[in-house]
Image (tube, rainbow, N blue to C red):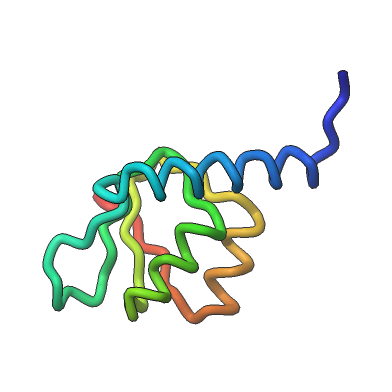
Length: 87
């Protein structure tokens, strides 16, 4: 069975959004007034950025090994969210 890139991206986005809905602690800010969201997941998706934006955050901090989907990279630019990697 072959899956094209767009279908795969849609599947990954839906899975990640469901996981985040079931486990919000994976996407928690270090402090309520902190302008940066501390993302602990292994994958950054568009859904993560939309959640970040809903929280009024302007930046999201990731581990260096976090995979950022192409759609997430584009969406971060559109939403004005800085993607910052931990040292």
